[in-house]
Amino acid sequence: MAVYRKPRNSKKAWRTKSYKFTVATKDDKSLIDLKNTITKQNANVRKHARTYQMITDYDMLYTVRLMARGPRRWHTKYKSSLVRYFKGAYGIPQTQKLLHGNADSNLNHKFAEEFDVYVHHDRHALDKLKHEIETGQSPGVQRKIEKLKNKIWRLEFQAKNDKLAAYGSN
Image 1 (cartoon, rainbow, N blue to C red):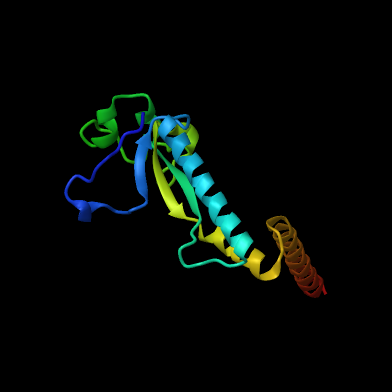
Image 2: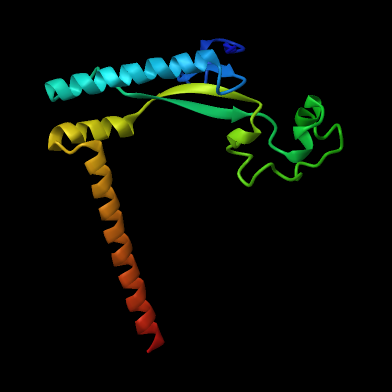
């Protein structure tokens, strides 16, 4: 069951409007319902835009994002929950080994105890939809073009490196 966390102080204390609720697992009914609602909303926006060949200021695509929450270091993963908050009182240095290399800023989902659910505007998808309407290129064609552009860039980069290597060896 989803947990709806309210701000501790006032509405001004909220950091972001995109936070919706917290779930214990990715199979939570509230999360699945939210994802289904967002999928239907996005499908309606795309259908409307493709039918009328235009995007209005009110058309917006959304995405659901999960942020993993839980302990970040190995010594707190399986011990008392108080240890993770009061390391100094327990004599545990802050330099204990992380669960993974980037755990201080971004916890991997496999280590999460719960997930905060956020709904954001998906500007990237909306830009792709606008490009589709302007040019008539489907998303699949747009991806193929991007892959080819990336391949061309890599070839040019490799050619420059080869030229520099050949110049440096002379």
